[in-house]
Image (cartoon, rainbow, N blue to C red; front, side, top):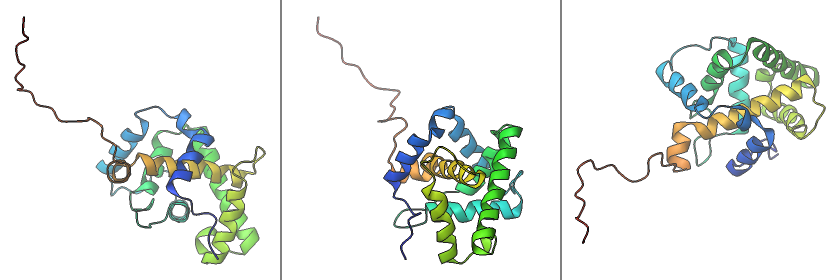
Amino acid sequence: MPSTTKIDRRAALQTLLQGGLALNLMPGFAEAAWGAVAAGAQRAPRVLSPTQDQMITLIADTILPRSDTPGAIDVGVPPWIGLVLAEYFSDTRRARFLADLGAIDQLALSTSGASLIGLKHHDLMKVMSSLDAACGSKDLTPAQRGYVQLKELIIYGYFTSKPVQQDLLKVVIVPGRFDADVRIPASPT
């Protein structure tokens, strides 16, 4: 059964822009968070339990899996999300996000009989598809709200990561090259 949760990279950009997360973040936010992740890549998440970290990793891999391009896990999105939650979310927003993440797990338990990280592929796709179907809705349950926000973070983190920026999108931060010692011909007068 094909997954309806996997999305192509162009659809991911569309979702990010529609979700409004990009508009809520400061321009240097993603780069600063990625720099901190790179500096402390071996640190354990500071606000996520191991189970919450596994859930985020599983959802990130389901939404943006490895294909002919690196997936969300390959570029380090889960640790980036852990850092964003710890350092960029307010205490209130973080508590709500973590509660909503717990609601995703409760939804998996009530609909499939196991926690999200314990689900087999078919049951996982069923839960993820039901959450994904609600992305355009206005009245979201806590599980749906948590999924929408997590999906936005996954997509934002993926597309702002250095490997995706440099290798896939071919973003040139400073175009051309810098030559400090260039002769400037005299202008004819």
